[in-house]
Length: 437
Image (cartoon, rainbow, N blue to C red; front, side, top):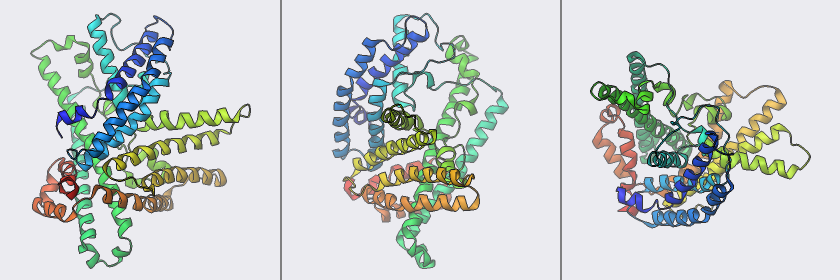
């Protein structure tokens, strides 16, 4: 996908970044003590940009959906991103961020050009990172700064990379073996549970793909840190605040794995979604789903204060509903709209499952867990995940025989030993589709 194509379908980013810049400027000015937070002129300007952002966002979405230059995988990713930015449009307009307890991270005195550049970068960060709150943005965490800690960081990344490559390769071969009938012929019982097995395998592939991107980020950050240390020997970069901060960065704290725990080891749905799945979009789900829904319940209750557990469950359902909408729009971008709402049903069902676990805890005083909890988790995920994965495969119209030929040509050993090749294989899937031929 060419850079020109990306710029052509991201015109809506301009007003969104302006919203982010205004929000950050208002927050930073209040942090510096120059005036009270939430300047009404800036706030109404942010709100006034909403219809412009939405109009351009809708136009860019239609362009991506009907442009054959974009592959199916790119359409899905861009569709999900656009849906997330739809919610971001409202959050950036109406959010009133909390004050940070830390000292301002930038020098108090800056020339206008530096201040504008700093605010522009901050506006981009508010748009493309998880939280829309300026006080919760990405920061380099200072800490352990030894060669040993950096090497340990690299070794743990390589270990995770090797595991993900192996699991992803096995998942691809199992999927092809099941769909082509090779494994079904050897193990006839697989025919009966074919949709469920494919759903499990694709869940494995999705996990490996997202986690591999996290490994790529970790290696990139390590390379930047080491390059900075090398250049500091020849150029006095350590006089720059960013260079000095980078040299003291604790890599593990700054850039942890996207998946802090292995999803396969989760013993409950609550455990799976809160601790074993990635939280890259957690802030979007909370800001656009949990907070508005709980606020609506509080407003509707009037003087009668709802029970804290009810508010918590409303927050859970609000977050999963926003997640359902984002993923549904992603799949709609690549194909026709799924009137059965199989993707939405999957994500909302997960919220229902978490609520059922809370009910079980209230009735029995025990959390869901252990071997039975793990079986329950797998059952619930696969039960509602099977129809969703079936719709994904149909919408993306993948040419599975060509994919099989590509895998056999590469060979299992090459896939196993080549870093990030799984991402390359998955990104080439749309090129195998007749729709994009």
